[in-house]
Length: 213
Ligand code: TYD
Image (cartoon, rainbow, N blue to C red; front, side, top):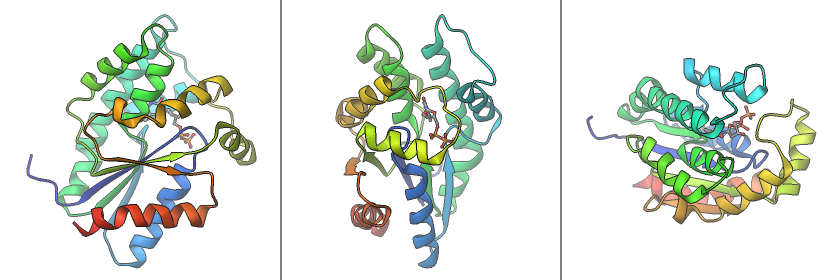
């Protein structure tokens, strides 16, 4: 593949961390500066992503025997499809691609729900995603599980598969150790407990050198 010209920026965090809001706020700001911007998310809008959304909302169910494995495989397949059909074409055009979740979500969520040996499982998930283009920067919005829980309630959307209080606490802990989950990737963990504008300002400060480069 020819070298990517754009920038690939990923937002991550537990459910209710504010990734969707921060992607929208950042996209508006970059558009106002006349930059080419494309926003997207995972699960993607493609065929495998749509199937995953049915699974997340409970409208379809997958094997409960090896549920985490099945989910990790589907998320990895969706990711390669998303890259080929949407992300890479935009990067080749020099666009800044802002993606709401990427393979750090698979490593965190599927490992945290895999049971026995989460670190061995995380290695397997990394291997599944070995062909996934590495982000220029991943921003983890670190939010206290009780704050995220309150935000989810305010949103009043239907409860999804992974929105369990104890799991969200384990995920928040995992997201604070990105170096162990995606070694070698540039990842910054930001305090996401603050108001939207304050977090957005922190995001801009961290991104400035990446977008300038
Ligand atoms: P979320 O990002 O909260 O989207 P929405 O705002 O539409 O509900 O939901 C996506 C869920 O999927 C979230 O619980 C995390 C989970 N997920 C994984 O478990 N693995 C992955 O690889 C990805 C991308 C998401």
